[in-house]
Length: 445
Image (tube, rainbow, N blue to C red; front, side, top):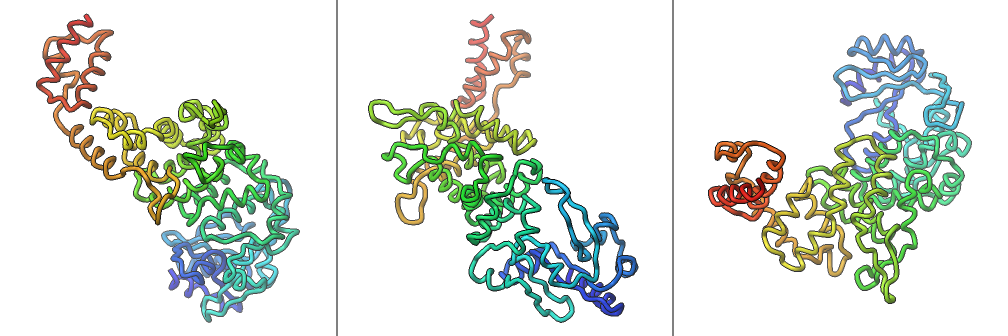
């Protein structure tokens, strides 16, 4: 991809202009992080000249001449021209944009959000242009806004700052926290909020920092009020020495990040880690001096669903989280009691992603010793899961089998099939299960 950028940069230089790598591509390169999304910015030539140059290199695609943003078909490269933006409303998209190829590198960099994203690299010479001490902040692990006047025009930058904290383990500068605290996040679209949330959950070294930053800026109440309700919510210290439900949830998030790419569905899995204890806000009580949250895993489902529907419209994601949240306590219970095979089989059979349920159990435990976050018996759970898969792979009684044995479909048929499925989960061989099912059907008719 650098070859394409260099070809463009050479042609631009022939016309008296200059081309820079910009944004996250430069930041990640400095940090030694691979980033395949190349962004370049072209200075010093008019848009129509740039379009001619791009046409010589490939097939340019324009996002609108007024925005000065282009790409090349078949290439992961974005080409932009310097531009000025003025807010026309409170939303992330409420801006009037002016292309200005001759604005200069300092003013072009000023419109970016944070100093670490303002570093530019000349495509042809490799020279770094760092007007706002972004290198210094990168070395210190500080996320600092560039210009307070332009920064506050885009409230999404609060979410972006929180996301960078999660991804890199950085902290926001105090003055940036103060600035973010006065910004209204209510006009953000659900799509953009979920986009930033998803990056934090899937890319974050410590996803908890996304929410810690939002907490420090007062930014939880609009999009994450259910999470805010966990702050200061007490738990039984015997089982949760780490503290309140907020602290527990943040620790679970970071432990879950260790396993997210071992799971079938990483994003819903991380949402499960985030939401699993939302029900404690509506069930926690003191009984005989002890703190309890009885049935929080089921009574909290409406709370979880309200949150999920605010954040996403992905029905499969919502279904996964609700299903797994209702089951999230069972793996550690069956592990501790070394439950019978039919019990663990029923548990796995109810789960949309049985393997993920084990990884969640490994996340939903306080750290008791060393680097191992799981105090239950994960070997037991994985062994039982393998047995469950083996049992479910055996021949079993089907509706066709029942009809061939003389049963006629009717109102009772689904009940009979459910009985046959119970026998399957119990590991009963097909021939014996068919006999038992037919006997059961005879009693039902």
